[in-house]
Amino acid sequence: MKILIAVLIFSAVVLIHELGHFLLAKKNGIVVTEFSLGMGPRLVSTVRGETRYSVKLFPIGGSCAMLGEDTGEDQEPGTFNAAPVWGRISVVAAGPVFNFLLAFVLSVIIVGFVGYDPAEVMQVEEGSAAEAAGLQKGDIIKEYQGYSIDLGKDLYVYTYLNEPTEDPVSLVVERDGQEMKISYIPDVDVRYLLGLNRKDAESMEVASLIPGMPLEEAGVEPGDVITSINGVETPDGAAYDAYIEEHPLSDEPVTITYMREGLEYEATFTPREYRTPMLGFSYNVGCVKAEGFDILKYGAIEVKYMIRTTLLSLKELFTGGLGVDDLSGPVGVVDAIGDTYEQSKSEGTMMVWMNMLNMAVLLSANLGVMNLLPFPALDGGRLVFLIVEAIRRKPVNRQLEGMIHFAGLMLLMVLMVVVMYHDIIKIF
Image 1 (cartoon, one colour):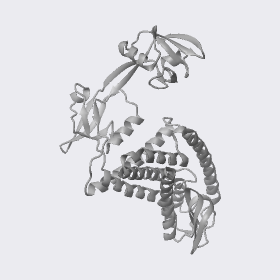
Image 2 (spheres, helix red, strand yellow):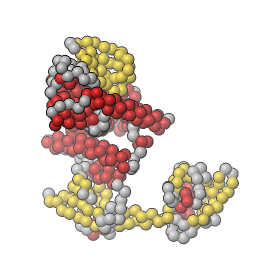
Image 3 (cartoon, rainbow, N blue to C red):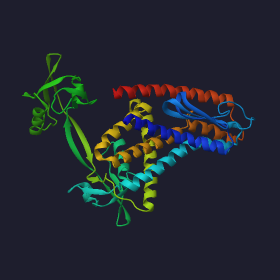
Image 4 (cartoon, rainbow, N blue to C red):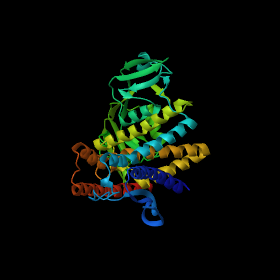
């Protein structure tokens, strides 16, 4: 069931995208030769007028094939290139625009039923720098470190993608209808760490090591089992935790013993200081009811949040903060939707519907943004050539444009195969 629901959501989002191209093509007198849902061989097909409508074997993807779209045919009536340049721009842009419209409509439904999450301060830690600076419970955060905040999850995404520093925290908050600025130097939690992640809470087997931390530098490897620390045996995780609680790590040297393939080894090193800046406050992550025009307002804000989060994630991808392993293709998307469905069932039918709609919003906004990237073969890449044509008042060499789009398509196919491989590996 979960796979069926996931495929239906994915197919609906793609269908709306292609419907945008289809409707604007018809509006501009361009012949649509085939409008299809799915990819691969046709399962069902019918011809109405000049268009073949098809359902294809693989229910992931879709297409809106227009006459002369990828050829140099300029003079033939009904071809893509025979339409005015601004008409062609509207046809290409319509796919992403329809995705954003779908995201907005679904977001309005979600906000109407569930509400929205204002970035409200729920608690200020007593004695913290935030309290001393004047931050109060009930303040609505409007800006954090110069980053505009509309929702609580805006703040969550920003702090997730940007590691906290000891630089001053700058806030703009709304209190009693008035905006005010608050700035303070954050408190810092200082800890000393060995730099390991255990297999689980009960085990002393090293699952992974934090790069650049003492255990890695001492030569400990994943799979090793720590048996004692400073001469005190640690047969399990509880014993280790009890020792650390009674003897907190500091800048004093530590000696551990560990087992590897039946042999015992010993290492002495100094724990590394780890400083964590503390915000000094907690903020809302739950929803409050919206009424009247606020439903439309926050429906639009939800779409803005999805678009901005996608752009921030792309920035992290290009700057190295995220890798190819963090990307998801159709297989990963279907799996994520399926997992969300399974996790939502215990919360009741209403939450299942809302979470499925939210996944559709996320997917639709992502598809809209990704298609607008100025990369050959994507809608954004085609728009670049059309805008250049509109400025120059003559088209770029059709053959050259076709070659560039074909090369871009091949690169995208390679990327899709790589992403699909990683998706399958993560599932199994």
